[in-house]
Amino acid sequence: MRKGKVALLILCLIVGFLSCNKDDGGGTTVVEIRDRAEQQIVDNDSIIGYLETHYYNSSAFDASNTNPNTKDLVISKLEEGEVLEDGNTLLIDAVETKTAVYAETNYTFYILKLNQGGGEDMPKFADQVRVKYEGFTLDNEIFDSAITPVSFDLTSLVPGWRKVIPFFNTSESFDDNGDGTVSYSNHGAGVMFLPSGLGYFSNATVGIGAYSPIAFKFDLLQMEENDHDGDGVPSYNEDLNGDGEFSVNFSDLADETDDDTDGDGTPDYADADDDGDGIPTIYEDLNKDGDPTNDIGSNGIPNYLDPEEIGSNRNN
Picture 1 (spheres, rainbow, N blue to C red):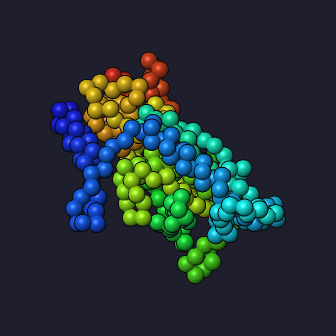
Picture 2: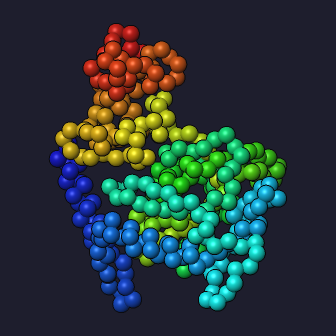
Picture 3: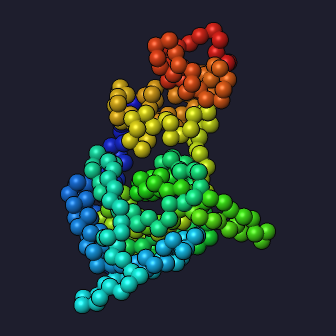
């Protein structure tokens, strides 16, 4: 089984290396897979250049605005010789600088926080979120948007969303308008500026070239905690190495970089039997409190992660 998975991984890498786009002549253009660390430096320079030469209407998001929304946001370029007027702020003076490790690369990204959000909930990287958004390039070309709320599993989006959204809170309250729409009050709102490595990297898509830094305006409305495999353990708690991603190293032995306890090629968040002992994780909740992580075995390891901890009192 392991050999088959390794072969599949090698095939995926080959396909990724030969990722192609149609050119104007109807042929294909091979996209070279670049070094992530080197590309991060190039992308960061591009983002900094954008932030230093663009401003936003900051006065629209002062204390008098009790329900900030990205539809009120206007980002403009400061032309050479133009004086910045009162009520506007250069992006470089307003963004928060953040860092994260992804694909063994140190990334820097930037967040313009328009509103923290007044709700009690802050999504984790593996949760379901309800948002409105607009994606745009550093040429200010919109490539995607949703003006009405849509729901996404953060694990299905480009990595930057998983790094940024957990910094915000959901809506303080919401009201059903009775016409199929919902009004949200005091929700999280911001803009993320991402290097290509936290976006689409070498994969060109509609409106976005390979190795393009991108940005998203977003309104965070609601969230729901995900349990992808229905095993009673919230998915974010099945990130064993705590890196905010789910990974399988495809080696013969699991190690500290792996999120796959039993080494079967399926990370724990999608594996209903995490330790591979033949007993579904959800049935290893011995004290029946609804959380298998609370049952710690005699060796200090939670029973659902320990195939050796097999007792006669299991909930079979």
